[in-house]
Image (cartoon, rainbow, N blue to C red; front, side, top):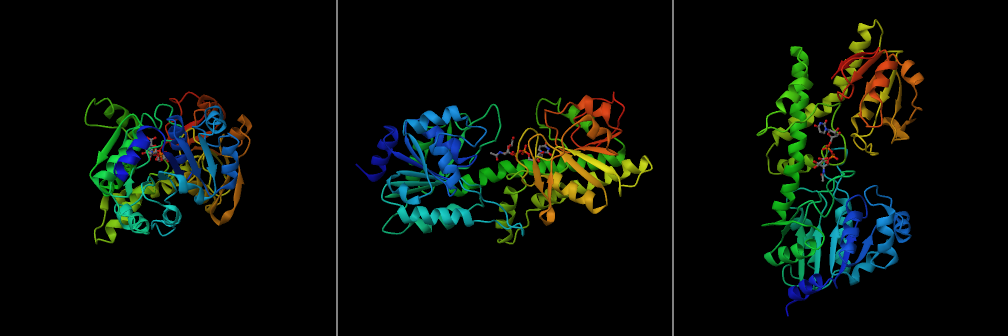
Length: 437
Ligand code: SAJ
């Protein structure tokens, strides 16, 4: 029996030991799914606090309730550790660590390199290593493979390597690991075969592609598609503003087209740790090949200009009330990067707040999920308690994140001026004057 066949047998019989590196919003749900598929799972994370919580069966990820995690830990199926050494016994390792951007908008591959080096130090014959972190095309072949080719390992013969993009959408009520198709690209056909066998135990539909580079590109197409279309619809908003047309009416009517159209909506900018980041991994790679990814750069230019556009809207709206922005009280509702999440990473709200402060406005915010934010220069701002008094005290209320928890009619009834960047408020029925993006 070949090494590959032995691994396939262990996977099919669920006797393999499965490793997951990085126990965040991607790695923990994946580890849980593998444990529920009856594997023995070892999760590795650098955070001793996360490891301790997990080994007590306590979840820190909203999408994984503690009551789902606890039985897996108590049965011994799933355990966490800070030591890569414990992965010596693993037959497979899925790496789910962050791939952020540096301030220079260059990829920060440090987490990937550290984890791959640590896995390489304990890798052995018959191991499958899969990278899940979103990255530029070529990463698996150029960074992962060379680091694993030590102590006589040969890719496709006695060690197997693949890329499989994560498609976890935090707080998505409909799609989770099991029912979101999983793309897999192996370095060799044998690598693809064993990676498909692994993920087929946790995902209903696995989609093999020819190479890890193709799989890396699939993910970048998915998220560049969103960033570019959000940039397009933000530019539509700018054009409609100049033409005196209600862009929201236009989008809602266009969305009645049952084919060939997909609605996106204008907003105060592009937040989150995926959409503003992932396309720059692609444009960075192409720059090294003397190619300028024009759509990515243009979309980024438009999306990053939206916070200032919002601030100018506020300034002009106050001006119509014969008020200067300087000295006016501005209440920002919602700072999370999108509705109903507790994540503020890359949120345009932070840019809006800083720009308002730079122009002398007295800014406070409220967000039901975010107790405090760190602004530029490390200034910390705490969420103000929400009340109708807070609304009535504002010269202008700015809706940045349209959390479902807000009662928009109440906001209209108790505000004198509202700049609504998300079209969250119902058609004007309150006392407030409403300015839409
Ligand atoms: N945004 C707009 N207008 C839109 C859509 C989004 O301004 O029409 C803004 C959001 O407010 C947010 C940013 O763009 O600030 C990103 O929003 P997003 O809906 O793309 O949400 P993310 O960042 O959570 O993206 C994730 C991605 N999932 C993965 O990468 C696995 C993305 O591929 C998903 O399509 C997206 O969730 C989703 O559909 O919820």
